[in-house]
Image (cartoon, rainbow, N blue to C red; front, side, top):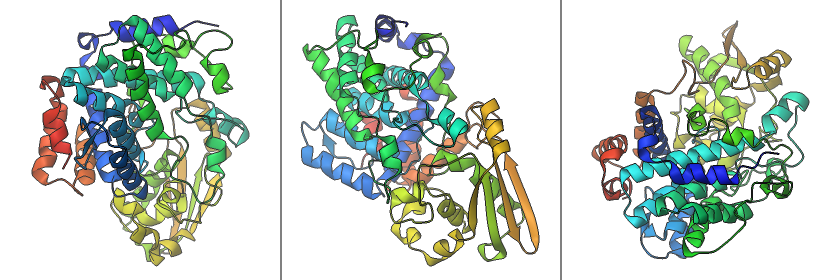
Length: 462
């Protein structure tokens, strides 16, 4: 089995801003824009409010901002709150990398007076390591395709604590020995793979598939511990008893971490979400919205909606929606809000929307199906999200199909800069003035020119 610890640390220590291709720098700016906007909108959720309250209570040196709130707390507590906020609406990227990779680097960068280039470099490296570890370990989609169920034991981006720590450690300027210690500490702090337990719980809990806030807090802590000289196993990813073994992974392909590292940037394969809900529903939403907009169908015109896709098992009771997290994992609910032309964003998950009798009534019109032909398409192209939707309305049957969901980064459906800016404006408008929104966009896209992050963090705080 391939040893990777030493080569991974070398990559993290030796890579500098000048080594990043222009398109990689730009994609990292897009990631930052999407994350900051999602965090600001996330304050509308109960999960987000609790994270802010806990960060305020924990306090610490006022060195790093809680996005959208403006309070400054310790870097570890700011990272904790911001990670929870970015993921609160389930509006962050797929695979879930940004909520882990960005908050630790951002918090430590602000606390140390780092430059915009420093932050770009650190968040690029953090995203790349996060993505490669998920590629090396993930088994969820493969199991769904083969057996229409998830593994008995699995995680969902838990391993991103390694990349999150790498980003914070890069900001601190850790050299080879201490970078290796930081990653070793992070591996020991990785949460248990609890996804199967979480997905069967009703109603859906706020902690979701992994405690994101803890991972972000732990990443900053791991980096600071190593900076002070705390030690761990510097070769924690190697050997028969390495990280993959004590994490309990069914799959470990370390070559996915190291192959073409620094040459091929795998984090750029992400998808940006146009809808605040589980990615399993996005292609179906695309097809449904296309039908109702093209044919000008109103909710009362529609008799039934039949949706065909790959198996979805994360919520055993998709028609029983009580919480904001239930919304994120209920296809009948999100099709109902789309049918009523409720604009994508935090409004989808407000309690007023959840309890709207019109939404509740429309949900009963939706039937979910697993389609073997769609499963075969997904097997042939794992990056695809095939879906078909049939809408019966006004005595006719309307059919919509798609192979890729909108926002998929490597197809013609890729989210444009303009689309991401519009999403940011929609998310940030709940708290920021139009002028501050424009300033934030400009400062993120010109981040490489910033000598320090104070202008950006002052803008996206309150």
